[in-house]
Length: 370
Image (cartoon, rainbow, N blue to C red; front, side):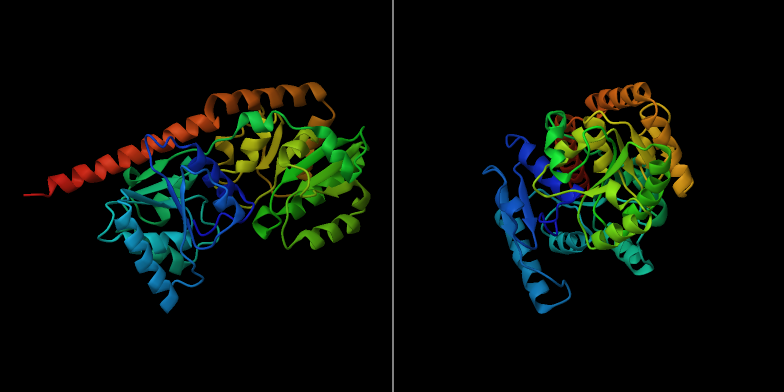
């Protein structure tokens, strides 16, 4: 990983998976370009290492690459798996001649990929033995854009800790000043352009006019926060829009919501929706990336295909006006999370993927021996 410091979905998930992998099956090493509290707090069974790096194409970058090569050899590493683009370039180059099984990840559908980056991916694919994606849609896009055989790409869905999200305390959200009688429409997202939280707020203005008891909760952080606060004021709903405090956990905020939303322009497979399902919430989400692999339209929530505030607001208004529908959809989403996305199942699938990946590369190596 580039880092475990950001409080984002992939960083949190990697820490959880590394901590949960059975050390009798996999000896796990987590390597980053910078230290962080999350990296240092990993359990003792996980080996943590830092290779300080800001730029790959620099003398320091070359030194760290050779240092990592020595680390791979010294620890007898069988497989290297990178989760970010920068760490992919770094680990693939370091693995040449040192490690047989080289895995890179594609965790989104490439909305921001440039021609140069796609060229880099295609070059890396020559030296990667396996590509891992977190959704069938990401696999489809990766195969098409990178001109890669689907046989080289494996989908491993992320998971969610159902116990953590089933024990939220809604009273902790009261510190924000939300009325106890309010029906809370919420979104969990870092405040970045691709999350298009502006769409959520513009739909909130329509919902507020139709449902007087509605309030809106934004759980996240990011550089766009002040702009979002100003937009809420301009839309005339500043007194009904609330922003999260870091002192309260995401499960506690989810426990206070009636409807949970995702308004992104692009996604791989959103961890936020898995958390919504684990909290038993109906979901309203834009139909992007692998979202439809989680949300069953009309059954566990609604998929919004038109990117307009009115189209996004309509299913939310319907849910707020129908408590039985909210309850039924939330319950079905929770049942699906239990069946398909519980974190222990993800850990087992990832472990088996690693075991199979190493075995397959060893077989290929054996076949070319005299």
